[in-house]
Amino acid sequence: MTPLWACRAIIFDLDGTLTVPQHNFDEIRDALGIPQGALILEHLAALPQPEQRDKRAELDAIELAIAKESQPAPGVIELLDQLRANNLPFAILTRNSARNAWASLYAINAHEYFSADLVIGRDEATPKPDPAGINLLASRLGQTVTNCAMIGDFRHDLEAGTRAGCHTVHIRHGDARVWPEITQTTVSSLEALRTELNL
Image 1 (cartoon, rainbow, N blue to C red):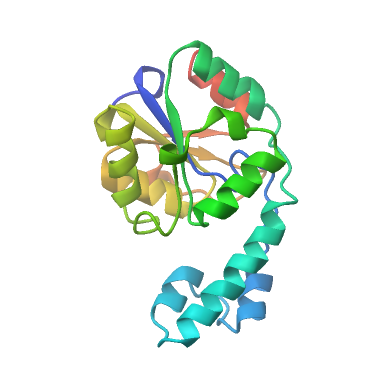
Image 2 (cartoon, helix red, strand yellow):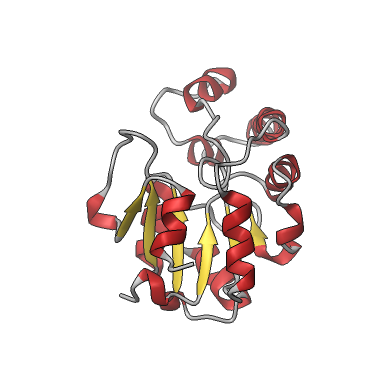
């Protein structure tokens, strides 16, 4: 496994990683009539049409409203500036839609750091924990997956990275749950991540 400081490209989760955590997934499940504990995207994918289409439209609307209120995680702009200054390419892989991801990036004033082909959502690749999006982004970043780091705040991010063969980094908020079996590095903030990356 490539150590974090030697990784040649960075793939970020977005919500709760580059932004302050704000999604209440239990409330989203209630709004969509999804059983508590069920994975939202996977539950919707199993619904018949046109119910699936309608529920996905509801989810998009809910998440767009949240995205527009996104707040930047402390240190995000400084981190992106340092990555750019060190010629270390980076991208975003989210279980949200790409459209909503861009709404979040504009809300936190980070949109100028990304190009359209390096922001991948649930409609461009099979959602995490599937590694498809990581494989796609690694290719676009000009790196093998083993030279990439997948950075996120939840199990889906870490599992996708592990399945792809990336170095996995858990941004752990407070006393949030940990998954040591699929985590190579744990940090408490983006500022701490900069230190781990030797930036």
